[in-house]
Length: 302
Ligand code: KPL
Image (tube, rainbow, N blue to C red):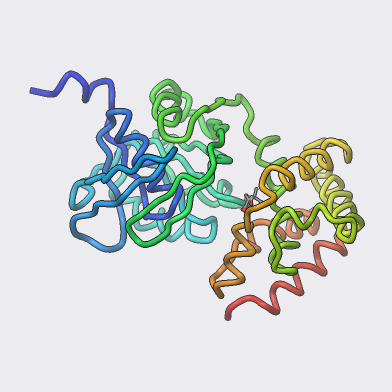
């Protein structure tokens, strides 16, 4: 007979073993959800979860068992399509899929791959987490998240998704239209990430006056292309948001700074690259984003 709690807490499959994935798996597990990890390497998996000064060892089942009904896919933007192609045969017909990553451009690629009965969500989070080794995840900064449904099938299970994502990466706000939030996050990432990667500095250093004019031009160009894409933001609103993130994350190295420092692939194509592709669609020139894109491309691993 089914456990009564399994009715309330459906089984979630978390794809990969990145920091946000493990953070989510640990918090879902803590909240009472059954959780399985779908990862490249098979075999038992346990990891240490450190949060608010406490440490907990989390044991998860050996291998994720399909069909997967509730899937969190917190992998880098460039890894989404390959992960999804591998997942497709394992998804239930009415599966719900939650994407979460920096940058934009994947939703348009994912939607046509899903069946009309499969729901798609996007979740954008400001939680900070990193892995100090392969099996230790540290919740380094309490954040919050926003999510939104991206197709009709997603709306059918809004409550289930909201409850689970509240547990995984809350406090969570479910937005009727997630797109403005995605563009706002893109603005932050398109300014802070490339500049910190180029100058190999902490986010906080971008508060120095020597970066003010570069930041301003990047934001001006962002506002232009956002407007052409039907997203209207004032220059001041974006400036304030970027300044706030620089201040709040002053001591952090951005994800792109870290990727370049470690010679790893970055999300450049889905951040600056996405902006440039949008600009091209609308016959706009973004010389500042184009210049930083070229400089970083030259420094990217081949
Ligand atoms: O999202 C980030 C990132 O590093 O990718 C910011 C907000 C810039 C924080 O570092």
